[in-house]
Length: 284
Image (cartoon, rainbow, N blue to C red; front, side, top):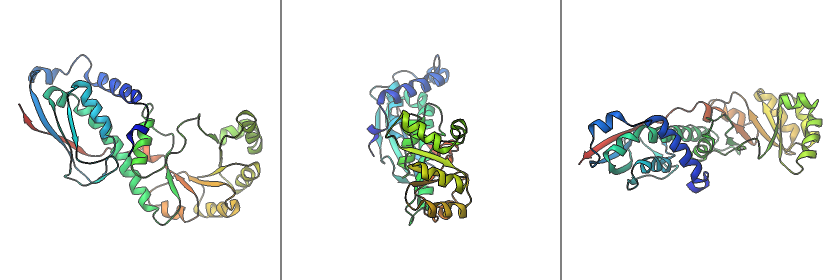
């Protein structure tokens, strides 16, 4: 996986710097009192569960912030499926760096691997269907580019990155404009040529969005049967996105309606941390 496509490295380094400052503050009192500056350590990261790994390249940069000569030797690649007991990484550096950077580094990888693992489980439920799993903007502020990278590592697809790269006309926009048709008219006037998605909750709104020329029609919080009728009505004249209360148990049923996309906010807003343990093997 191309980690360089995540974002400019300075964004990652800025996030790491803030995380380390938050955790270390004026200094790691415990480690600095017990461990001499010259002592070295070898350690490993061991997976405690099965799933998809993501974010190891971020962890490497965390450790290297505290030890520029830190040796980081991963045994797996980004997006690999791993099993409990697998040694993900071997590392060597100053003992202080190994201990002080541990929690920050793990926080990044455990969150990102948790998102990737959850995404992969949902993608698996869609095997045999053309529908794709999409993420949303329901991400931790400041972490969106890493959250969305983790979704891709798990086999999902990214929706818009922010408010700047795609138009999504939602309920309150429609209320402010007066109608779906008027909302699209205003957007076309302000930003001609940009892709437009419209949120709908009824078949009547679906028809209005279709007639107004929406590129993507979101079928929000609809019953499975209503979604099926909407897909038939749209008849491939626009892309369709199912959204709202998408649990893993409902995915296959929703995909069976023929929608193009299924967006799942829980991929990022309710991610469970992936269980990884850091174990020191030798201190010199």
